[in-house]
Image (tube, rainbow, N blue to C red; front, side):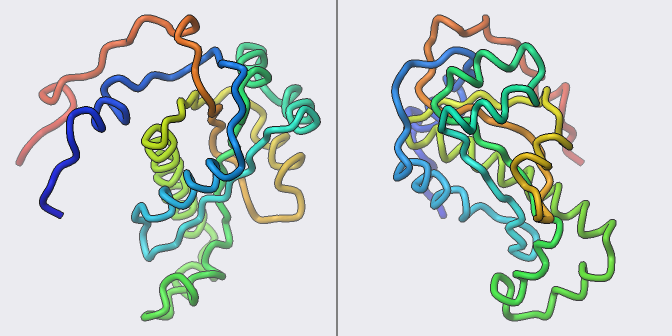
Length: 196
């Protein structure tokens, strides 16, 4: 890859993108959610393990199940958002490695090592959650990622009977700029980085 994307695209994905707290009453189609996933899945993960699992909560019933599990400050914006994505990771992702990483028998690396499997699932699921937000923004959606919820409760309510654990939530839709806070500063290169 030798051609960088243009400044307009970079603005859309990073420089002008904001975390939204207020949402327009405009639905997000299942086809668009699938398009977001179809982009994010190409982001790299170690051994192509792809542990992210996502539940898209879009219905009134689903939101009502989610609401009591949210911190008070996250309830109204999540109820208003057309979609709340629960970004989780499958602790037994390694069962799919024969399909996802077929050139090496990688399943035994993780199958007998719960600590390594958990660390790998969390790290790579977090990466995929970030890819999800970049893909959503690239396709014209706004995002409102957040912590501030009962992870164990969400796992019981939305991932029961699975090996999936929730990581974070991300409201998705078309943001209402009237709900934005002033932009917070970021660390400079010299504050955050070192070249050796």
